[in-house]
Length: 387
Image (cartoon, rainbow, N blue to C red):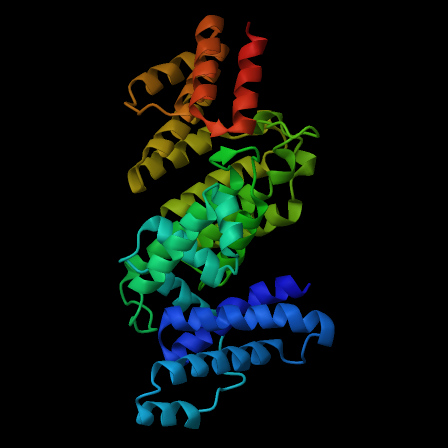
């Protein structure tokens, strides 16, 4: 309970300090010290009546102590620091969280640094948790965060007027969710801590348009998570999933969100992807899926946001509508680079077309190219069935 509360309050406290004092790196250090103090004191003394105010006051004191040390030879600045008491409960909420997200997604940072800093500063994950999620050494994540904070030194705590900054925020949150939904490597298919954080942070953004589209996409995708693995932990493909295990509450919210977004704002790529997910979610069985509608949506998505994964997923929809041989022809003309998902789609279509030998080889090739152990096991099992 306390851990969850601290994770929720961490970005609000950091936002309050950065807005008041400036200096992202020093404020983040002060907040981490306050969170550590709370994790030690609250289990013993109880959670205070105003936990956010407690954290802001404690972090502010730490920040002032740092300021005193830094400006010990500058009496005027020290006097200002002493004379300006911390505000126990400044206004901090969605707007501050959005601004903090915008700051973490500063264009001077690389995408991996943006992701790491967002998860640390806004998501409240520890460096060790982020490292485990992305299967990289903790020192590597620590270095990314440290370098990112150094680059942000002196940055003003104001939202960028460039709408591209919000687009970067959405992309970072999408990357976090995608890694959590299907881990790119390791022995786990899902990393729930990442999908949970991505959804929570997306809810902090102002609703409408692509923000709503992204949230709907996340909810509709997350709704299928309970059915994506069987009792042994093995991957279960979409067509074979027990849809009674899908989360009906998340589906209802996701469908409602994307229906409203499509009717009230210009169509964007996240909205189109959410609409595709909604078609899947509303089909009672795999056989009832309206693949013609999905193909139409992918045709639109290919125009709005072309990319290799859009092309590949469109091939799957095309094959469902026109048959596996037509799908294989589309795939052959798609000019996609080598990737395990391309090989997996080719294998599936070859199997449907009756080319058992070709399908088996493609499944094995796909299994060798993925670093995800659950995906490897699934692809190898498909190949074994065709032996």
